[in-house]
Amino acid sequence: MTAPARAPGEERAAARSQAERIADAALSCPDVPSLTAGPMARIVTYRAGLPFTGVAVHPDRVEVGIVARASRPFPETAEDVRRLVRPVVGDLPIDVLVGDME
Image 1 (tube, rainbow, N blue to C red):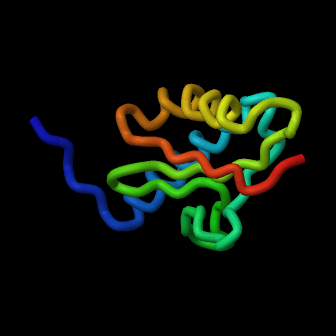
Image 2 (tube, rainbow, N blue to C red):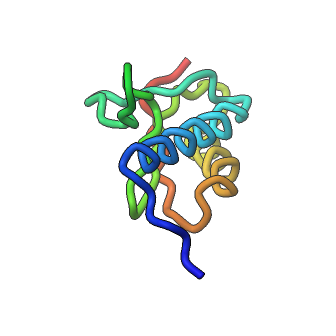
């Protein structure tokens, strides 16, 4: 049995809640004090009101823009973020952009 098709508003609501869950997971990393849309302000999820910055959910991948603490190597922090976000996104590739440092 297949699930019923979602209306456009329901699709946006599902994407928004997934983006928020991804953000919560990324921010649970102690070396990530905040998220960023990146230098070109392209890592965003559009929704009613202001865009949700720092997470972009695409059909074939997820992008997460982070501000990283400089206390450890950025590749290690990015790998931690991927590990924390993985349960939310399943098998989708996760691109982590270190857009700034603290």
